[in-house]
Image (tube, rainbow, N blue to C red; front, side, top):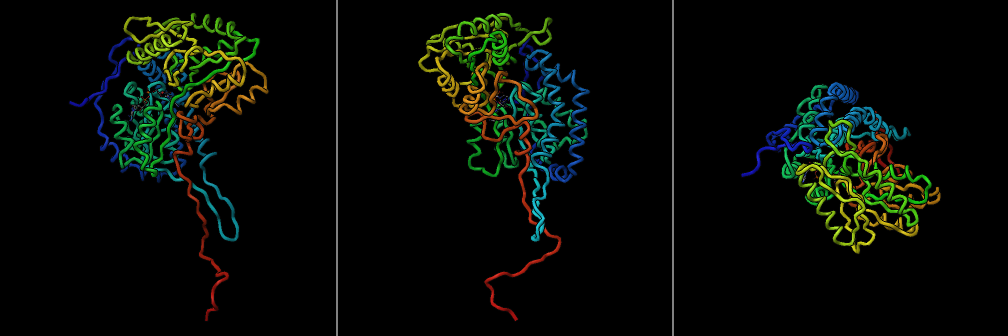
Length: 472
Ligand code: NAD
């Protein structure tokens, strides 16, 4: 018998948080198709005003939304609150982005008439998103897509559906029709059925490379559907010459362990200059030892919560053991701190001695360390991945940063800043297995609408040029 319900479990307690019936893909898509033309025909100013009202509804709902995020993902309450603030801020950022990226333009006004550039929405967009930012990530696709005039079918992660529902209620309370933004409750099977449905004009996906590639493969023969893929990373952070060891260690810790390492931009690999190794690794370990791991509402506040579920904790433990038994040396062991619950302590492992370093995204609190002799080796090691999302250099001089910037393959390249935490006013995306060159963030407007170029004149006016016989 096929599964008929999705059950969301609180990672920090192991208790059921929410359950609901799996939706019907055909129903939601046909409802969206019927609703879309009227939404697209609304004046842009109306759609913008409704999105602003949505931000107000989220503001009113912020305590409830933050609590739901914290309970459903296990992230600390302070972090859930910052996620809600990002959701609120997205409305204004997206309105600005629409104006800068896809607004109407008159290109010239010559004797041949006007050349106008305008953008049209694609139609009905499927939005598929992961569990780690269950409000911000869907919102980052939905808001720009709505402004552009698309209707939305949003399938939240099966691990955080309650947050998705709450988010969508805010669109409806703001006055956006329930048929224009719909939720489809479901798991991978519903995700694929939605992405490949004939009534869908585009897929806006954030999640793992594994899933993104599966969707891309299925849609390979459908160039008519726009597919925006925001996927994972195996992100490097290089620590080079710097007297500021304590600051460098904080940047490494923030990059590797915020959100229990469950961020696409989290630093997975610390690449250190040989001569800096002892000082940096000692300081990073000391700081990691001080990290409070706990439940979202604990006092004092934890720095990180559990990972999303037991399967994730088991997978990470297996990966850590695999590295240990294949040449890795533990600097700080991965421990399951609260029985069967998926609380993991931050772990650090030196993998310099591994003959074959795994190029996979370990989506949790495991930092792998590699020591190198010179700067070229550091850059080569940093690029030793099929992914290309975020990379950071800590220390070094401006010339070294220039070399790093020029040679590193990633969509986010930082200097003396963590790998995580990108400005909302910037585009966000990666190369390689991290994305398909359709960055989100400020550039999301680009994939939510297509350009239409029009040569226009109020009356027909034309002269026949060369190549005709004389007429009567
Ligand atoms: P996931 O790929 O398992 O799931 C993402 C979404 O896809 C979910 O809604 C899921 O139900 C759906 N899905 C899963 N399998 C599917 C299939 N075969 N067909 C269609 N849909 C399917 O990702 P996750 O474990 O929830 O999230 C973690 C991943 O997300 C990490 O790899 C992380 O790096 C990535 N991520 C990327 C970004 C970014 O902006 N680049 C941001 C956050 C997270």
